[in-house]
Image (cartoon, rainbow, N blue to C red):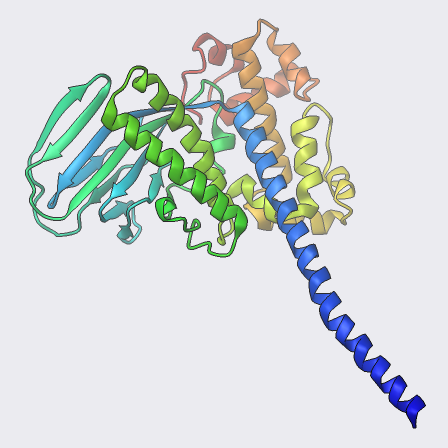
Amino acid sequence: MPLRACRGSGKILLLSLQSLYVPAVAGRILKRRKNLLKRLNMDLLSRVLSLIPVTGRLDVRCHFGAPWVISHGNSAVREIPYHVLLSGEAVLEYGDSAPEKLMAGDIIVFPAGGAHRIYDGSGEPASPLVERQSMSLTVAENEGVGAQADVLCGRFLVGAVPDRLLRDHLPGRLVVRSALHGRGATDGEGDPAASMAGSRLARLIELMREEAVDEGPGSETLIGHLSAALFALTLRFASVGPQAPHGLLALAGRPRLQPAISAMFESPAKPWTLDQFAALCNMSRATFVRQFQDAIGRSATDVLTEVRMTLAGRTLLQSGLAVAEIGEMVGYQSDAAFQRVFKRLIGVTPARYRASGGQVEAG
């Protein structure tokens, strides 16, 4: 009897230890997986931004009382408009999408450069604007006496390189929710990565606001640099939120596909095949093709071509190498084949692209 009791107690003790050990191990595995996804995401973002430089400008600081409206037409080539709602509430209208309510701290970016309206939502005709110039910044105010709102309006300026790798992998409009209040891209509570990114965004926005108001020495230059940082932090914040990110950053949620995308950036000149990409990811060809397409909505060969043409475009502008040499650098043994693909993707020949200084609209 004592022996049976001892054995029974041992089982109880073993089960108790398992109940403590298994959740702890599972928690560590989950934490390591989140950290891995975060590193993959940041790695992809760094790679894209290293190929496609983005700077920023703050153009207008708005202080409005309802009723008010900001109407923005289609942007120029290589310009991505953005707005930061510092205080108050607003409504966003963009394309055929339903009107969307905005809160203080929301950041709205339009990678496609499409026309849009941001207004107070009262339905009343907007009060007349009064604008004044302060250095390179326009300060816009109105005579509205309703609910107050402060908005920063600016542009991200994409460098003179083919930018399809950036634009085609971002949505037409991106709303990052309430960074000032520490929420994730869409209420990412409980996610340390989203919380940290949100905290940094909030500090950056506050610093931009202070510089726009105080107009101290060097404010214009500093605001430009802060705006450029805002672009990268906005993409980071959006990518670590609970919703699946769009385009290339979606691959951060598919760690098994990471070896393929890393190979594209690290060795674009290699004559990659789908079978080779699949082998790098320890998948069958069919599984790799399906998972890659599901992740970002396009094929691995399409993305490889975009990486190659982006690198080629940058090299055309930054070097005096012959077109054929540049084509060979990005994986094309045939000059004719390289020129054909470049024109199809970018819209002009490599020679014309170089002659224009990259100031052409992608096809």
